[in-house]
Amino acid sequence: MENLPAPETYIPSQNKINDNLPNYKDYFDYIQGDITTLKADIIVNSTANNFKPITGVSKSIHNKCGTSLLNFLKKNYCGVLAGSFVESPNYKLKCKKILHACGPNASEDEYLLATLYEQCLNYCFSNNYKSIIFPCISTGGRGITEERACNIAIETCKRWVERYHDIWKGKITFCCYTNESLEVYKKHFKEILNL
Image (cartoon, rainbow, N blue to C red):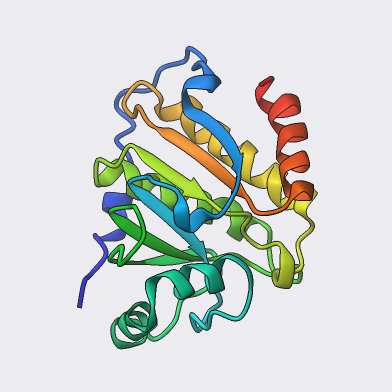
């Protein structure tokens, strides 16, 4: 069984904090497409608590990776709580690791979604990964609107980069499956990041 590092190793050192704002263009991007065809150190899968790949991104990733992925997850983990993630090998994806992230649903605290993005980025930092691709977490069946989920995602990642950009140089990409999602991210990139 592969174990995640101890939680405390997820937290980047706070000894070097740069008050200067980063160039957001160096850190952020968004794209429309199939996440299973993209290349990055980390690809994030938006998963259910029990890893069951019913719809959306999770179904696409499991279809691409085959039954070995679900077998690995069920063998090594008893599930994943909202606001947290577990890791797996890449199988057939063009990445080094897959993070299976369970976002909250509309009836749960939105803070869990922000925490989830932070923990994924902390994991990248702790393991010296330089690129990560996020899907639209907690939308669709989880019930949070794309507008709200997108706002939380970008605001959270922006704050993280502002805090750690002098000690982490990497790229955060948001992958949108539909035209509607792409337009939402385009709007929020302009409003929040001025890109």
